[in-house]
Image 1 (cartoon, rainbow, N blue to C red):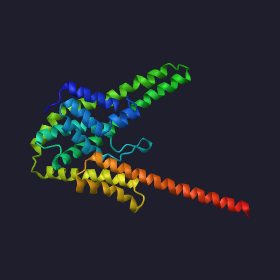
Image 2 (image 1 turned 120 degrees about the vertical axis):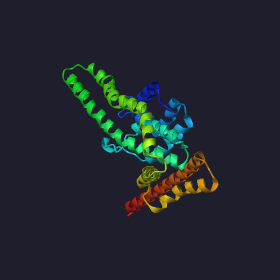
Image 3 (image 1 turned 45 degrees about the vertical axis):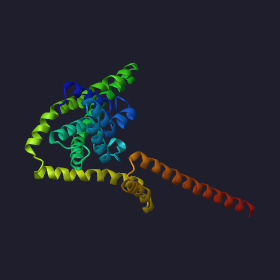
Image 4 (image 1 turned 180 degrees about the vertical axis):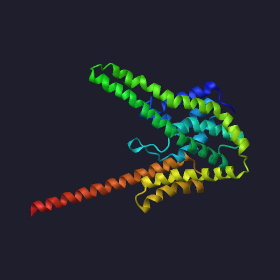
Length: 280
């Protein structure tokens, strides 16, 4: 499996569109095209192997499922994970002869995603730094009353930043990635300690994403109950993700109705207390 120049160019364009603040917009770009789950589908279409792309994207999405960027702080750039990490992981899987759905395949894919995500952080801050140049141009235009210049600042100049720090790195790394993967295969055989270590670490990475997600949503011990119900149903009944999602929706509605009932009851009790005070 190789990546042609045309395929690398297409992947580079999608990397530009999914950059944050995003030429495709934050919602359409960063929070949609930039997610590994969507990027896996796009990479699968571009590289001609949709099932492998989706499975690799799903494996990487679990690692970054709870990724947040408070105040613009980015610990890992999922755009790079989606459009550099996923294609390279697909190449690696084909090179080593691993199935994307196997335990070793998932571990290898998540390891690639994590490595590239760290590199992508540098590209993200590079984009943000270059955008400051256009911002200063915009302020000078406002001071001079040249408001038409702002259209270039908003829509034209940022393309330069994204091309330099998104398109070009994605193009080069995807195109030259096949050579790098082949060299890695020759230097790191499957039964060697480095690859076994890589598989072990990669297998643990999804736990990190799930743990961060739980830390954000679990406030008390009983909050674990609906979380573990999904795993129990999937393991015992063999339900797919859609079925588990429907059951989770039912739980969400029940919890919402219970909380609303508690709120109404508390409000009614407070109103009764105020009426008694007025009577006194």
